[in-house]
Image 1: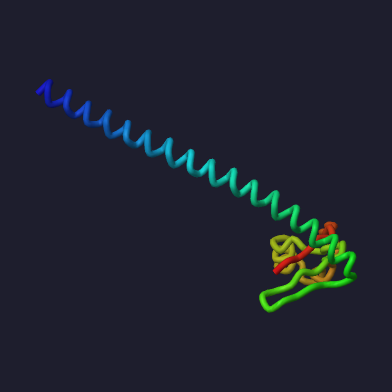
Image 2 (image 1 turned 30 degrees about the horizontal axis):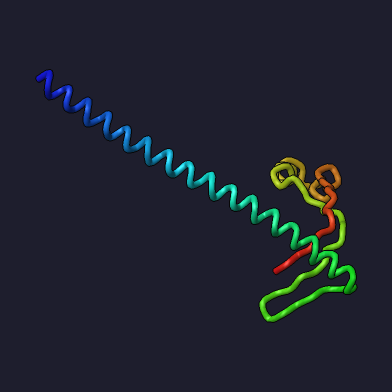
Length: 115
């Protein structure tokens, strides 16, 4: 019985060792992908900056059969807290139109949109 338990323990240890090896390999693979993604993001941002410069020089947008590139101007975005509005509608329908209490504004920076 003792030998049977030792064999089972050895089997469990070998199985765990294989799992550990697989985990190491997969985690390394994921880290490699992450590094490549970061590198590609940098290259994409550099290309986007160049597109922005060219669009500014050109004075407009650009398009082809697959999509377009356009300058998006800086602006302001207004949104509302939907949960608070729902609660307001239920609790005080007359105040529902007074949205300014729940209005959120945020600055949207200018950018280049490429599709």
